[in-house]
Image (cartoon, rainbow over all chains, first blue to last red; front, top):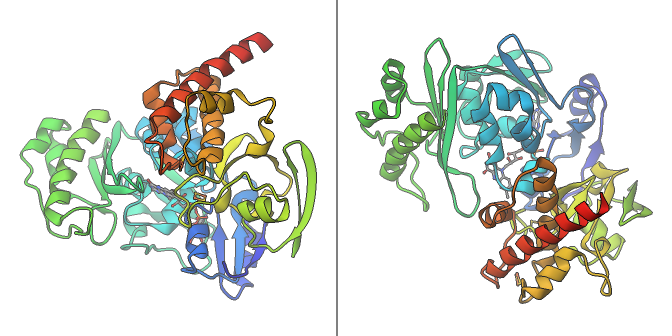
Length: 264
Length: 165
Ligand SMILES: Cc1cc2nc3c(=O)[nH]c(=O)nc-3n(C[C@H](O)[C@H](O)[C@H](O)COP(=O)(O)OP(=O)(O)OC[C@H]3O[C@@H](n4cnc5c(N)ncnc54)[C@H](O)[C@@H]3O)c2cc1C
Ligand code: FES
Ligand code: FES
C-alpha cells in the first residue's frame, strides 16, 4: 500500500476542508472496498478522510413516512435496526445479506452507494425505493444519482451524509449471489411505493444498476409473483462474463423479481 | 508516523506506526502477535479476524490508526495452552482443523457468532453456522468438523454463561 495521510475530522465542514486541501483526497468510511483496492495498488490517494468520527453520520431516524440512514451506518446496524425492520424490512434483509459478518460489521451504506459497484446490493434499494442521497451540499434523487458502473452524480470531494428512504407499502429484495464473492450475479429490488411500482436491477446490467420498465409495467397492474409470469426475459443491456451469459442473467432477473415480490 | 494506543488482550500498548499500517500488520509486526494470520490480499479469507470493541472484523481491512483507543482481542487472548477457550477445546475435540492456517480466524469468528446469537436470543443451528462462516475460507477440512466444533462450543458457552449468571 502506498503512503497516505490520515484525517479523522469531527464535522462535515472539517471533512470537506481536509478533502479540498488534499492533492488527491478520498473519503474513508468502512474501508471494505477502499482498503482492498489500495492494497492492490488500484487506488493511491494522498489523503484519507475518515468520516466515521463525524457527529450524526451514523444511525437511523424514522419520521413522517421516511427512514433516514446516516452514511457511516454499518450494514450490520441497518440489518438489525428496529426502525428499518419495522418500516422497510426488505432493506434490513438486503443489508443482512451483504458479504459476510465481518464485512457487515465495518462496511457502510454511504461507502456502498458512493462506490456504485455494478454488483453491489444497496444501489438496488436506493433506486428501487426512489430514495434521496443527501450530501454536504445538496439532495440528489436516486434516478439522477446512479450514472453507470462506478459512476455517480457526486462531484469531486462531495460527501454523502445520509440516505433518505421513503417508506413503501411493500418492498422486497432477492439476489443470486456469486458463490465466491457474495456480490450479486443479479439482484432485484421491487417496491410498491403507493404512487407506483419501481423495480431496480443490480449485478446484471452492463451499465450497473437500472430500472426495468417491463417488470414495472407488469407489477404496476398486479403486484404479485404471477404478474411476472407473462414478462419476456430481455437480454438487451445485460452483462455477460465468466459467471453468467446475458441470456441467463435476463432469465434470472425475472425469477428474482418473483422472489422479491414474494418476500415483500 | 503517528502514535497508536490500544488495549490488546487486556494490556495497554502504544506504538508509532505509518498511517497506512493495516491492523493485521500492526498486530503481527509491531506487537509480534503472529496468531492472527493473513491468507489473502482481497479481504475474503477471514484468517485475520479479530475482535474490536466486541465486533469481529478482518484485521487486514482496517487501518491501525483508525482504531486508536479501541479494545482488541486476538486469538492469543481467548485462552491458553493449559486453559483452552471452549471454542478452542471443541476444535481440538472435533478435529476442526488440518493445517491450522484458517483456525485463528475460525475461532474468532466462531466466538463472535455464538455471542451475537446468544445476545439476540436466536438459536445457532448448523445451517446458521454455515451461513455465518461465509467470510472464512478453509482449504483443508471441508468445513464439517468446523461446524460440529462451533455447534458444541455454542452449547458449552451458553452453559458457562448460565452458570455465571
Ligand atoms: C469480502 C467482501 C464481500 C463483499 N460482498 C458484498 C456484497 O455481497 N454486496 C455488496 O453490495 N457489497 C459487498 N462488499 C462491499 C462492501 O459492502 C463495502 O462495505 C462497500 O462497498 C463500501 O462501503 P465502505 O463503507 O466499506 O466504503 P469504503 O471502502 O470506505 O469506500 C468506498 C468508496 O466510497 C467512497 N466513500 C465512502 N464513504 C463516502 C461518503 N460518505 N461520501 C462520499 N464518498 C464516500 C470512498 O472514497 C471510496 O471511493 C463486499 C466487500 C468485501 C471485502
Ligand atoms: S487476510 Fe484478511 S481476509 Fe484474508
Ligand atoms: S485447516 Fe488448513 S486452511 Fe483450514
